[in-house]
Image (cartoon, rainbow, N blue to C red):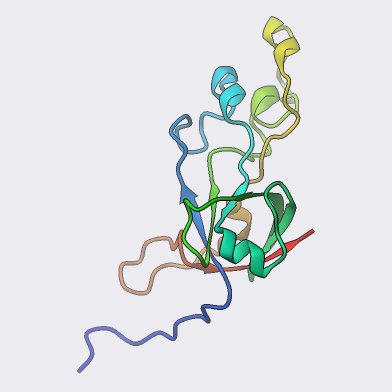
Length: 157
């Protein structure tokens, strides 16, 4: 007798996303509006192994489309050996639509532009949030959100 039901594994020809990649500057996605933290880290490229990237004709810095069963996002590729083949890792710290001038580049409806540091913003990128492509499916065994096993397609834009 099985202790839990069997679940078919998705094909390994498609990358899986690790949407829970952490960058040691931000605190989850709550700190993107902090001006000094956003100056250090304001964009979240898709980290992808050179083998996986080469199979798709992707080079470092290329715009890539990451598509799942529930949506798609476009970001830049960061080709690196730090990620194992078959995985694309995207930080979830930035890319929120409502994070003020520093986090999203947009003024809050109730915000004021009276911060003298606004003139110091040199970046135009604000990232994309991977939650848009991670289905809200619970793990069948423990009931927790499945952050790291979403099957995606990755293609050059």
